[in-house]
Image (tube, rainbow, N blue to C red; front, side, top):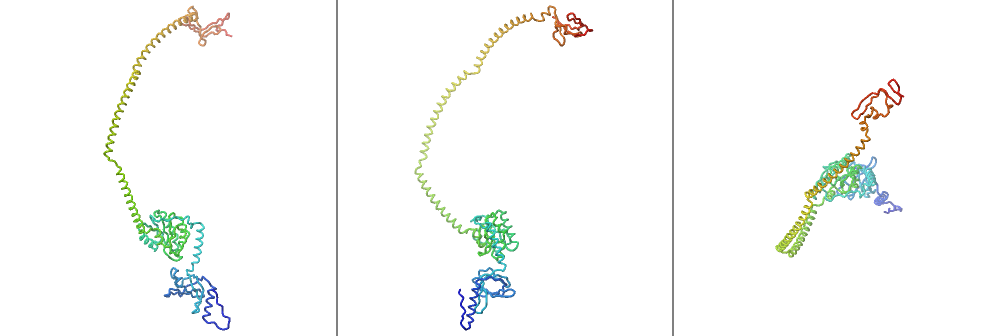
Length: 460
């Protein structure tokens, strides 16, 4: 916007001209400013606008927040609040009051929380926890819904109300936890793990009703975010109002703007289902009628082609008689052939009878025995004759024959036959075998040629 030039001609400005030019100078010089201070003199007239003063230890400035902007703010600020406002610096020309036209107001600590929010969001996003590829689909008709929230808050009331209206047959298990304050993050993590261990639900709603950034801060906790990311169940984040965004919304498999919207997402409208089932029933009935008509037509065609069963039975009976007659004939022929074959086998068996074979073998055995006996007699006769001849020849050279002529065989215990007197010495015991009997003697004297060996003489 162009700044009107200040007149250079001589003369005074009107108050209106001065205030107008000052207003434009302020608005152009301060397009937008953030200001922190203590809120005081807060008023809400019937127009819906807010008017208040922002001050610190030394100074103050008037502020105005028009209805179109303050309707976006959750809650109404109160006297003494430390706030942070964003707005344009301007001038209320009618009074010449310098003021700030506020467009946004928040608690003074919001800047630190917002920075922490952005840092954690960037960290988890870098790790891939917001990646759509890792998100699990939520069931369109859950068998059982688990809810991690306060058991006394508005969120569980809204969820149960919507489920009762849309699909009351879906069972719900509440895993109660505090959802605000320093201990809330730890209890939410424990409740999520308890739902996992319980194993009953197939989808999990995690959330609470609306509130300030500080009220919702437990859903921006890193431990809660990681518990949601690691949960094996499909998760639905339902925190605050539609304009509220938390880290849990980015990590969860599905973000619902409100707890009621989460319940609507997970519960089909029973009336829609009933209408759908009724439509399906109507189509099924129509399909059954069409099928029945087609089957009736087929039955009619088949009935026209069907022959009289009595005629069919008569033909089958005649065929059975023919087969029975053929069976009798075939059986008789088969029996005749088997009888002939049996007689042939019986004759062959008679020829091979063990009794007949035994008689033949006995006859043969008698013949062989007679031949063996005759052969033995002849062999023994020849052997006897040869033995007689050998006996006579042996007797000629036998020492016994010599003994019969008066000779003796002299023996000692160590020598079977003594042929030389030199083999003996006086005192040896001799055995003299005669033709009949034997005699023992002791050597007294030995004559070897002309030498006479007596017990008083040594032998060389």
